[in-house]
Length: 319
View 1 (cartoon, rainbow, N blue to C red):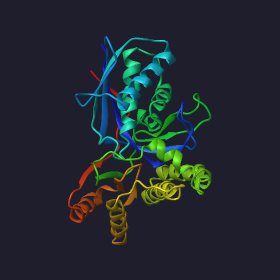
View 2 (view 1 turned 60 degrees about the horizontal axis):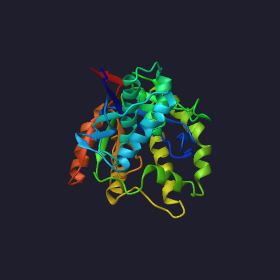
View 3 (view 1 turned 180 degrees about the horizontal axis):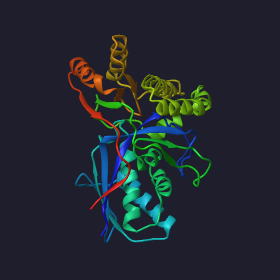
């Protein structure tokens, strides 16, 4: 009997923002992420008379269902298996609001597929499988800190664990300012960003920024990690603003949150922001400052939802 696969979402500290090959989901740069304990997806596959997909108990149709079915057909062709499947998923991540919900969703789907068909695959192959559904999903196979090496082909573009059980005092506060799905998908945003005059600079800086982040993690340097994560996120969003034509994922509250992080830092409360493709802000901090930061944000915003997260685990199965 098939088991339920659980995968936790991840937040990239060194961002993935650009595809070299859209079909294979090969990236133009390597990336590094933190897997989070507070957000996860669970997926189970069972044999059925026809393909179906339910999310949080609701049958899905349209683009969301098509994306899942196309992925399953691709995996069936890859491994020489067949059959109609019923996909049941529960997503404990705000979908499409900039919290990398696709990372846990497709990592869980890949793991559930491997379990259902009893495939003899290691985590490296599972990472490649997850990548074919969503690039960031390649990193959610692992816990702690993971690196997705860009590679040059399907064979060598996969994630690997950097430190799966970090001892570093690092917390992430997910600040939900807007719960609406983003208007511009990550895929469209990545492609449009290539028109920025600074895009090549973004690519040229990748190897050094990745090496610097790995060094910060290995030496436990929170200040270096936070500063670099904030810089990398700002660089990514500068590409959207300078694209031709320019666009942004930011809302007015996003700018307000960025300024509040800076004000807190000036007052001696060390914290840094990172932002993915959406309006919501994630704050990197240490345990001693979590409560103070949360209080400041709850005072500054009328409607805000804040969830504290630490390091999450890699793929697991629930019997």
